Structures are given as C-alpha cells and as structure tokens.
Amino acid sequence: GESVGLHLPTLSVQEGDNSIINCAYSNSASDYFIWYKQESGKGPQFIIDIRSNMDKRQGQRVTVLLNKTVKHLSLQIAATQPGDSAVYFCAEYDYKLSFGAGTTVTVRA
Amino acid sequence: KAGVTQTPRYLIKTRGQQVTLSCSPISGHRSVSWYQQTPGQGLQFLFEYFSETQRNKGNFPGRFSGRQFSNSRSEMNVSTLELGDSALYLCASAPDTGELFFGEGSRLTVL
Image 1 (cartoon, chains in turn orange, green):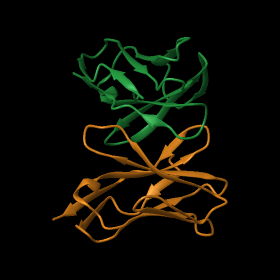
Image 2: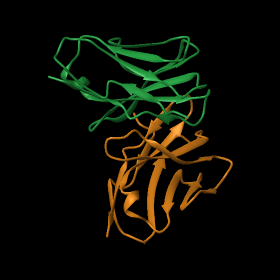
Image 3: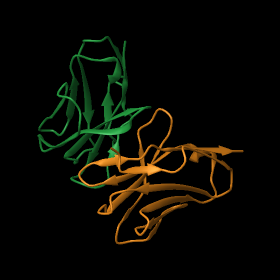
Image 4: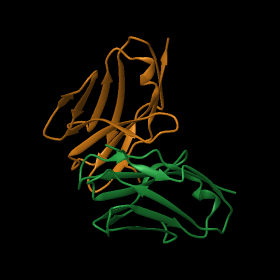
C-alpha cells in the first residue's frame, strides 16, 4: 500500500492568503521527499524537494517543512495566486516515487 | 531545452486490444520511468528503464511491459486491454536518479 498520504483532499484559499498543505508518511527510513503540482490536463510539475537531513527548505513563494519525529511534511505557499489552483502531491522517493492521494487547491478571487 | 514528449496524447481502444505508448525523454536523460494515474488508485509506479535495461518494476501484471532504446526513448505496451486500464499514463525522465521531469501523459480510454 501507499506509504505517503495527505491529510485533506481539498483546500479552498482566498487569493493573497497563505496556503498550507499537509502530508504524513509512514516509512521512517525515508530520506527524500518531493512536492509536485499537477494542473488540469498536465503532468506533475516539480515544486520543491527536501532531504531528511534538513527541517526546512525554501523556494520562490514556497517552503517545505519536514518533521521526522512525527513523520510529517508540509508545503506552504505564500500569497496564493489563481495560478496556484491545482492538485498538489507529496511523494517519497527511493528508487521510485510513492505519491500521496493529492490535495486539490482552489483559489478564491 | 525540450521537455518530455509523450505520444499519442489521447487514444481510445476496445477491450482485448493492445496499445503502445511512446516517450521521448529530455536530451541527456538516461532514466525513463512510467506511471499510471487513475482517480481510484492515484499515481502508481509501473517501471523504470536506464540505459536500455529495466532497473525497477512496480506491481503490475505482465500485460504491462516496456522497453528503452539506445537513444533513451522508451515505449510501454499494454496487451489484452481491460476496462480498468483506462488511465493517464505518465512518463518521467531523469539524468540518473533524483528529480523526475514528467511529460503531459497519454490518456487511454478502453471501451
């Protein structure tokens, strides 16, 4: 079965607000995690990754937090824009990607 | 730099038929992986090829097969199609391991 899961299937956020998407994993030996964004009709697009020797990593408007104690990671999107509307997946990588079920983010104008 | 190209983008088949999907990776990438995406099962790993050899395999029946050519292009084949094979088939390439770059997928409908 899947080792990676997301807490909520949907998230509605007001434009300009910050978004937080959560993900739990079960394999304590996992050491590489990736967040993907998938827009309608497209393939998953890499957003940001983090290795287990880090707690936090920042990109452009995005931050990933990793809590190894509770096996939880989150994706924070600052100042959410309409173009951020998509399905977001967390994935664990060893020799393959194991994806969570995805969270659909809808940005309200 | 061109991205991952998958063909065809859409196709319709009937039960019992077979289908071949093609993937051209990003230039210089030697690893090609295939994933199946369905509403019920989400994204699931099919197999990975590296330098013309299958390096890893997921939990799919033998009806699902693939190959990789010397130019790193890859094909996957599904024989004796079933209704449940209807899905978006995604190809991803990587230089070796690590960050995968996905194509836009081939959407297969089995009637």
